[in-house]
Amino acid sequence: MATTVKNSSSQLSDETLRLIHQNWMRRYDFEYEDEEEEEKRFKIFKATFEEIEKYNTEEEAPLLILSRYSDLTDAEFFALRSTIQGELPKDMRDDVTLRRHRRSGKLPEDMQDDVSLRPHRQEDCDACVLHKRGRKS
Image 1 (cartoon, rainbow, N blue to C red):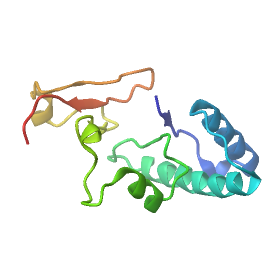
Image 2: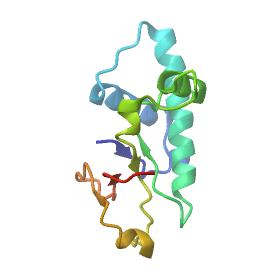
Image 3: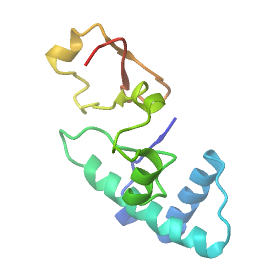
């Protein structure tokens, strides 16, 4: 389960953000090689946290959340998850999820009636996570 960003980081001190980062590290069982690497990853994590917070303030925007990749730069993430051809590996393509939870709680009509979409990996976060099953593109 990923973490939803609900607080305003502009109101959070670096100390509080460091505690959030440490809890996030424990959650995903991460340890860094040294303090220098941890500081580098904290800065990336903090920037990601602030970007998610800013995006989540938009009324009609899908809800973004922290994930196990929140301490990676965009380049690191895409290098980790992309093949030379620029596609996701097959095992990831088979498990792509749609995270378009609008704050109104309503899905677009065409999605509400689509029987190929079912709640997937739903936990306590109240975010609707849909999984595309058995649908040919």
